[in-house]
Image 1 (tube, rainbow, N blue to C red):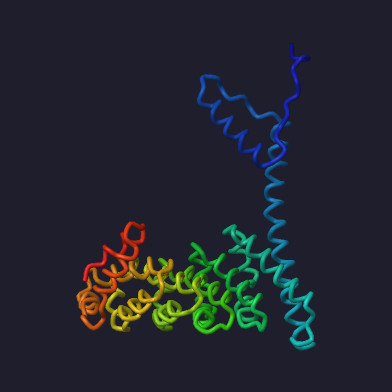
Image 2: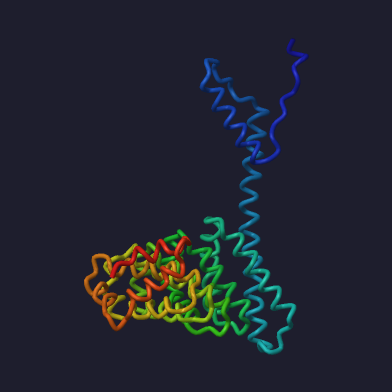
Length: 315
């Protein structure tokens, strides 16, 4: 009887909403007709959707509050001088960058940060900050926002972000800043035609070359990895890279004690000998001694996974 029917219970969160949608879809496949939505259910659904929208709005408000603090700190610097700033204020700004980076893993939040001027502030004020913790966090935030976001990438090009990031990669005294700046460079140039043009005009391959010669293992490995990916994605750049003496530089890296960077270096050499006569010629130069080096390393690494890459480079 109708009076014995239990009242319906509705989900209290977004996961429940999604499950309800799935269940409704499954039920619709059956022979039973779909019942009209009751007023109670309409009101619940309206409220659930409002909660979802509220959550999104809360994140935008959180971004705004974070930027207010960063802008306020900038004004305070102008009034009191950087040397008078307290350690507590610096730590607070670092925490704010951590929060923003986490929020901007969501593409909508990354776009909102751009619209609200957060990227402009990061580039103009914090990439050049005296505190390395703020420099590398600003670079990391830029990378988080730029990854797979053409609209944000174009905005960053207009702000002149790429030359500044390349400069940090090349010469910042802090190793973490250099690695994070290179990460941001990678997010701006991979599979991005305009980014690659700007990368070339700012001598980006030379920056990678010097990165591979660094004593910072992470920077060496990531520089070689980016070089390999660019050569694979843009094979027409091979002649340009070879003309810079890249083959000789790569071989000099191979002569260092074996490390993870060698895998990417060997991959880059493979690219430069494939359908690139000048690259093949440089690799085959007797004075370079590449063939002897590869044979020696092959013996040292025989039976290990690394030896497979060595055997793939034919000179």
